[in-house]
Amino acid sequence: MATAAPTLPFIDLVAQYESIKPEIDDAIQSVINRAAFAGGAFVTEFEKSFAAYQGVAHGVGVSSGTSALHVLLEALDIGRGDEVITVTNTFIATAEAIVQTGATPVLLDVDDMTLSLNPGLLENAITPNTKAIVPVHLYGLIADMDPILEIAQKHGLYVLEDAAQAHGAEHRGKRAGQFGLAATFSFYPGKILGAFGDAGGIITADEDLANRLRSLADHGRTDHYQHARSGFNYRMDGIQAAVLDVKLKHLEEWIEIRRRKARLYSSLLSDTVASTPVEADGFRHVHTYYVIRTPIRKAITDRLSAEGIPTIVHYPTPLHLQPAFADFGHKAGEFPIAEKTSEQILSLPLYPELADGDIERICDLINGLA
Ligand SMILES: Cc1ncc(COP(=O)(O)O)c(C=O)c1O
Image (tube, rainbow, N blue to C red; front, side, top):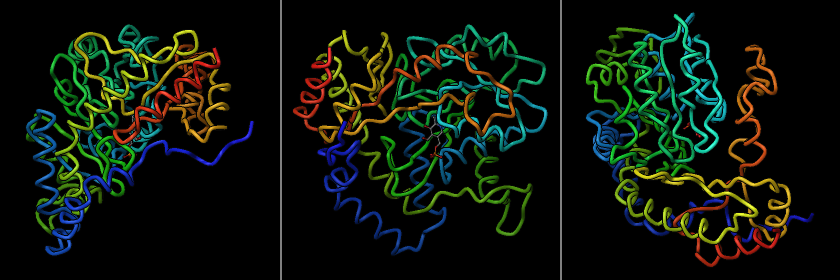
């Protein structure tokens, strides 16, 4: 089927910038005026405001969500010979960070409803080498944390939340970062709180850990040319911090609009063509991605792309089937739910500036395929 020129973007970062241009321009100019480019006052300010937003005592700004995960695992001395449990249906960065430390990622299948780590599979995956569990709050929905925390506590394991897609997400009023020892975030431009380039962060209630993270992410520094440990150059840029601090002030409003638009999609889509995202009682889904499940994905993407409407699949190939992880010896069929759903999931455009009329048009086109 023919693909038309896009009639709307998958996300509209230009429209977002236009809506807050004077504040953003001022913030960037202030960084330039003070030449606070690498780390510095703007980063410290954002670390405080973001940690407070998530309801956690300490924040550490870093260069990406991937480096956030990597430096966190390193700060906990996780490395060769250790195992870290996570899910197979995540962005590759979750497992990449584990591999970077020398540890082995132990991948698990997910719950069929939430698509998050299935706690029922945890006990069997734990060995004497297991050090940590990394649940992923996929698409903006908090994972099933109560049983995960209980099992982790029983076995003395760290719980590190990959909250790259879950800024502001809640379960029973608790935000990502209030469950495990620490949570990591991505501020990649396309995230719901996105920088003007790569950026990431870690939040934790543990002051000691926050200090170790801050030092390790800055060459293991204890003083300008004193290095306690060989570390990394994972600092956050001042410009990213200043941009993020401006956007953070708008985040709650943006999340509420996203949630309203997600409800509009879910109320309009016919359940004969697609099932819509679940949000059980007590959860606040932030819909970083609005992901439907459908047996007729190809027909939907063809129909929408013929109208210039883009869609994305997050993610088409579970990690255990990625060539990059072939050495871990996984086989097709090993994680049936992740494999089946990877063929059914489809992310539709969702952003605060998306017109309700566009959502109605997208739903009409999809429902027309019933
Ligand atoms: C679940 C998850 N973890 C980690 C990352 C890595 O973040 P970054 O792209 O900022 O390195 C992402 C980014 O998309 C992600 O979605």
